[in-house]
Amino acid sequence: MNKFYVKVPATTANLGPGFDCMGMALGLHNEFWFTEIPTGLEVIVSGEGHEGIPADERNLVVRGVRYVCQHLGRDLTGLRLEQTNHVPAASGMGSSSTAIVAGLLGGNALLGSPLNREEILQLATNIEGHPDNVAPAIFGGLVLVPLGEDGACEHIEHIPMPTLNAVLVLPDFTLFTADARAALPTEVSRDDAIFNMSHVALLVRALETGDYQKLAIAMQDKIHQPYRMALIPGMAEAMSAAKEAGAAAVVISGAGPSLIAFAPSGLSEIGDAMMAVYQAHGLTSRKWLFATDDIGSVVQPASAPKTTSV
Image (cartoon, rainbow, N blue to C red; front, top):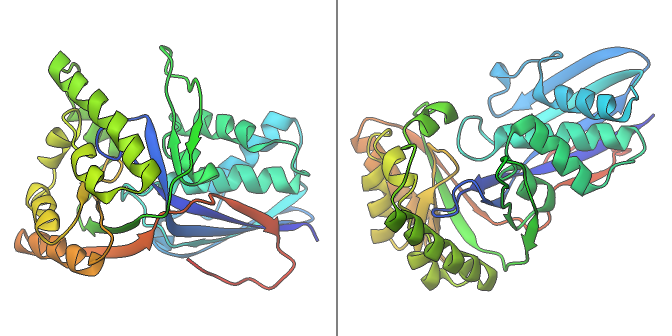
């Protein structure tokens, strides 16, 4: 029986000044088992947010499989998908990207793996619309994705970096990416553009060398975070609390509503400090402690019984 296991990491995009052009893989993963069956479609979803995930053709993983089949001009006799989620949806952690990437990788594997990862990335970008989450989900680590004038990805630069430690806090607050983007101004000043360019250059160096002290300077931003913080009660105060508790740097993860803080130690206490602020604003929240992920997506034959890990 043709069966493959795929594991895809969560991601954090922007990282402060790297708006829409930078992403990083995180040590929290969604897991998927793909089996070609004689006919039909079977979808079994478990784990984080499973109640709201379609178990039919609308499933984003299934759509990824169909997309790669269409691209290759081939099809499967039938598909059984088992999906175990550890990454919360609508959190700023790239949940949809894990599903898209998994579907493409799983479908590609079932068809004999004719596509390489660069080709998978292009298909993922076609579906997602931008590469800043799907690229690190595929390749792991830190990825730069400069865009051309037409919005297409011109190049993928995978930058090796040492493992960094982080804590992410997710308040119980619904913030859709479209609303987070709508809050941004259509134009920025030259001073703000220069500010971000100078900081993103330092950010690359700080991450490449694992320098937490440089992160404190490098993760400042004037293009998107000041506008998005106003959408979420207590977010600005939570960022300040994280720094007071020992965070080297703290930024909005993706479009939010989560905050991710980096520090060599004391991560649990930093997370608790952010959660206390949200509680004071009437919001419950959750935290995750993890290291960055430098491996990216994993695809391997799944002859062994199903097991789960994060």
